[in-house]
Amino acid sequence: MTSFPRSAPSRLTAGAALVGAAGVALLAAAVAETRKFEVRTEVLPLLPPGAERIRILQLSDIHFVPGQDGKAAWLEALGEHRPDLILNTGDNLSHPGAVPPLLRTLGELPRTGGFYVPGSNDYYEPKPKNPAAYLVGPSKNAPARPELPWRELFAGFESFGWQPLTNARACVEVKGTRLEFSGVDDPHLDRHEVQGFGDDDAAVRIGVTHAPYVAVLNEMTEAGADLLVAGHTHGGQVCLPGGRALVSNCDLPPAQARGLSTWTAGGRSVPLTVSAGLGQSRYAPVRVFCRPEAVILDLVARA
Image (cartoon, rainbow, N blue to C red; front, side, top):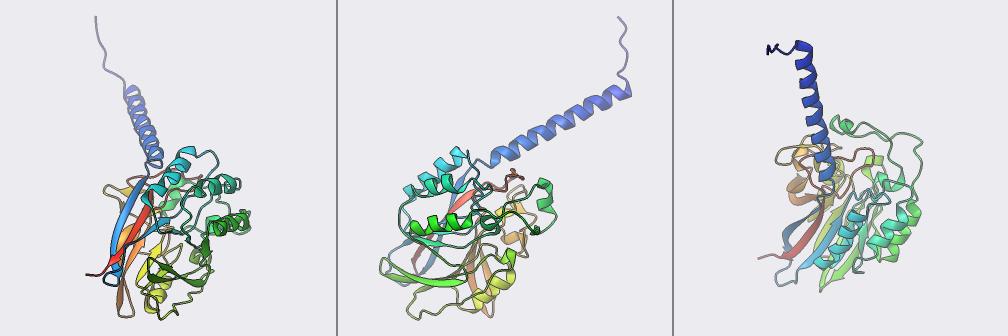
């Protein structure tokens, strides 16, 4: 039987099929990674000598959508870490119907008290977009986007004992140590007004923002923050192997888009921790080399 070489068009068709199959596999992996939740723990020696450890659970960028039962169950289980405070750094919603199921979920966490700052996806619905647009640069805030039910969301937070840090500061005493928090409304919406710090008795001063824009971090550091806490970046969301972020969705250097680093301003250097977040817009439901996370901040005594 005589065999004939495959024609060029046939080889091209086969090659295109392989490329297409590889693309489908990569997309499936990127979608699957959005459900591979992790807990990152940072130990920060900021408390006075002899002070008891204070554990803060940071939740950020949940971007909740009704029906995300797996995410809800994982969030509820975070209570097993026994936090002393809960710190929510914004972007909780990705759907107008998300508030009731999200509040039911967060209501299962320990009623330890805590604080929250808003993000743009607490106030406004996300818009349809190409997921690859995240790599182009900071997202834009389209005019006239429909509002989300943020008043209901924030009222729920306050029923849990979480205090708003919306261009405000507040103090709390935990295990005999006084902490001062100073937060801002979302800088991504240009609503921020840094209030600084004002409690001379506070042992630790913590600056909180949803979006870690350079100007806000600088102002908080110069005002006396001992620790800066943020979200918003999604850790880069689509990263190179090893979690190397290509973008931060703001003017923060991408190398600092996730994890613990150091921020220097006004002659002071302080720890900066940025959460990769627990979700993403429902219109860009992918992550690459950047698993979603909750963050445990263990404040411990200085040696």
